[in-house]
Length: 103
Image (cartoon, rainbow, N blue to C red; front, side, top):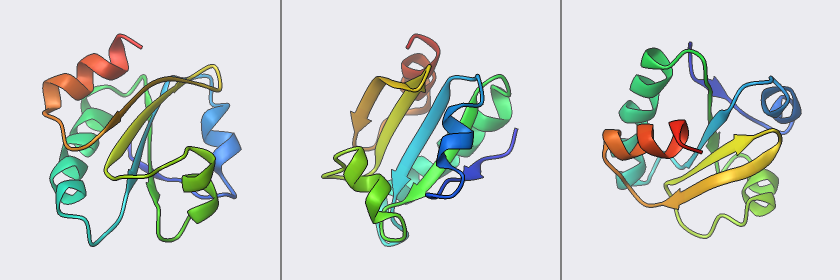
């Protein structure tokens, strides 16, 4: 499944997809975010049963505030519309997989 660019307009649709959702809060200027981004895209390809979205904190400040984003990259796992797991900072692929699949 492809990574979805999430914004205020499609946020509710993504969250209510019936799938567990991985959200990647990032910014284009953020070095660690650029390292995490290919891992998030790989997860989306290898685990199509999950929805994966990216939220640019510079463009979507209201969503960033809603999730209390203080540092990026921040990965959030949503299950049944609620936060099931959250991690701030770059992390290796195997830990991303574990965080999402065990949430």
